[in-house]
Length: 281
Image 1 (cartoon, helix red, strand yellow):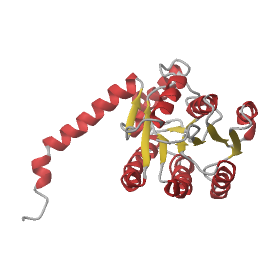
Image 2 (cartoon, helix red, strand yellow):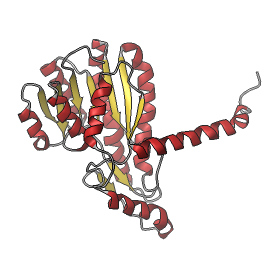
Image 3 (cartoon, one colour):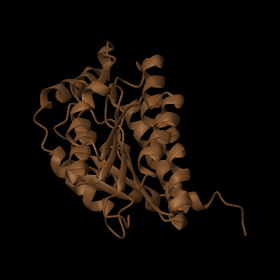
Image 4 (cartoon, one colour):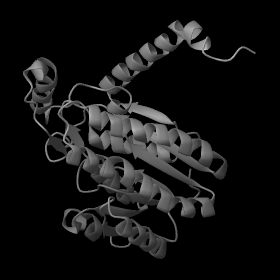
């Protein structure tokens, strides 16, 4: 993507997980990076280890003023942004019926509206450069919904659909868009990054509550390696024709493929009925 030998990255959610792994590998290569997290303390070591090529900023993507200030600081320090990695966000589990209104809105503020706002702030820099790459960390849940994950899946589906439009608009400007769709990875998603509204309706015990217990039981045992995922993201950033979507891990590849094939089968099976709804030509 970038013609630089030292591309400039802007990465959100660098305290742990994918954001941390990508930031470490970007800086280890000698590339430049704006590393962000809600609290500077969690990313202090990144900046201290690479003082000439890093800029550590406190950033809560739900706060518009912080977004404006962070992008301005990135431009002032490095002159532009080549790669934006939208990684900040978290999970939320509840039954659809029992979802808490405040939790749902906070989830969308972080996972959806914050991501939208930051990307809008970065796009003018990329348009000026006539190059750029936007990576959005979505999820297998952005392809297929699961019990107890309706609102989380909805937030990731929203980013997937928005990314489709963004790609169409920005491709002629040299700006690429890739959705990263991980399955289970050994990050702290199921611990620090997961909010819950426990189900208290007995009818959902065998589906929703069971799913929550399963998530807890697999924490720390997930098959996905964040370091390998980070290495792949860096590789994609240099690819001449990066993918619009890429599923990470065996579960994401298998379940994502199965869900999309089932969706296509529905469309094809019901196509004659669907076509009857147009006006006669």
